[in-house]
Length: 124
Image 1 (cartoon, helix red, strand yellow):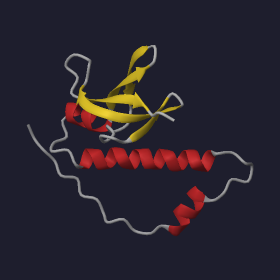
Image 2 (cartoon, helix red, strand yellow):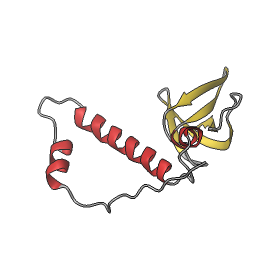
Image 3 (cartoon, rainbow, N blue to C red):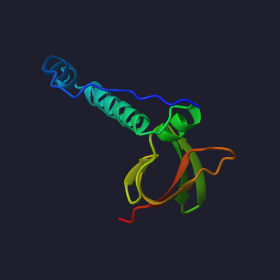
Image 4 (spheres, rainbow, N blue to C red):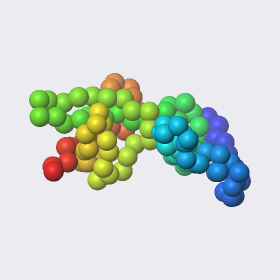
């Protein structure tokens, strides 16, 4: 099994690009906010991949996605999420509701290397 090191240039200021991406929209849409969230999501994925010890597909999948066991008043729901696993005690949004990450464990799916975030509703 081989491993690879990906080097990345230090972050530098890019005022023209930032001005283009983050300028207010003239037509009132949330396109800029949506793009900013997409960029942040991709940066989180890249950071997760860069901190992996190897780049085999299962390790990459486990670093950039996770499963969720959502505790609901009527029962439980399993979900697959295309984001790196959250940290313990993080607040996350799922289907329009806010939850806290109560515990992290192995995925409920067989032979799945991803982590599972167990979410509890946040009491108002």
